[in-house]
Image 1 (spheres, one colour):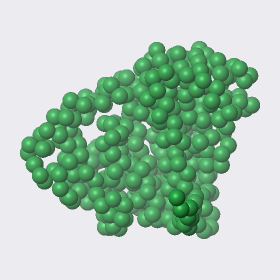
Image 2 (image 1 turned 120 degrees about the vertical axis):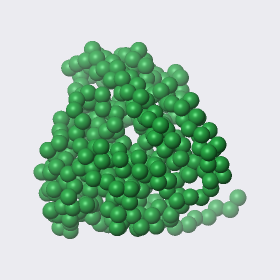
Image 3 (image 1 turned 90 degrees about the vertical axis):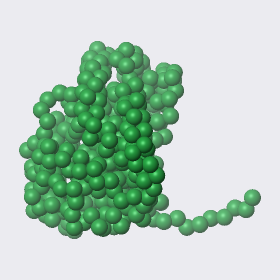
Image 4 (image 1 turned 180 degrees about the horizontal axis):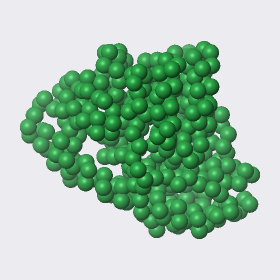
Length: 395
């Protein structure tokens, strides 16, 4: 076979695969208790209800549901109403449907940011955010995140006022992936005000806010946006099921044509069939009962995880106390490296995500992300007990 080489683009040279995708296979190994993947509870996926919605759409719309199509207005209308209920002034013309929130990140990154230009992200953040900034060759400025109140707003202001001004800021406001923390209401208002003051687009990546099971709901950063510089990203992946691959952008109407052109350069459009079926599910009022079940289960499972950590890791670690979402962030003794410990953990039939995989600069090596959402409470308790054995071996 002939061996040959080609020159690759600079973007591909910088891009790294998400460690979560590499580790996702552990979730299907029945011998391993995997707290690695951020998966909604498989047994709560509304299969029968969604099947009925698909049947309704196919019977009602026939071939139209299987063709190329503009974005489906009933779905956009539902999203606009939902955003207004959350305190965001939103019209149909501001809503753009995407294949999940990650595609929204990719679109907005390319809308505002070129390689070599500055962008601001949290120093520990979702790998997908790193892929559309660091992975595209951006000159990234990082800010710390307080484990009680969210992103450091003073650091954000310093990063925004530095010259050259950043072209983009990305924040996760609710039940942060991987930290589990939420941005306080005061900080949300401050973040929107900073975007306006320094004329910097701020992307609000918010796939988890609907999954609150404790505490009071806080409006999105977008609700405080008076300058039109906050761009909201939502997703149905965690509140319905990941395979639906539906998300949305809320943006200024005058930018929707540019967003549309960028999207067409990726994959033309989102599945007409899935848009119509999702709209049927939502318009028929099926979401709220589903969310009530999901929140109740997540409350129970997060409680089981926190109790197990208290029982087995007191004195060896500290951890966040999320009020929703899917994740708990665990910080171990400084000398423990969770990357080096990972193989031993898998040998004990338990898995997690090493915290350094979320750290832009590769530090935070004594941390890990644990997910509780797709495990029964007893499995969570057994998994933490196994994990504690591995940790004690290194103390």
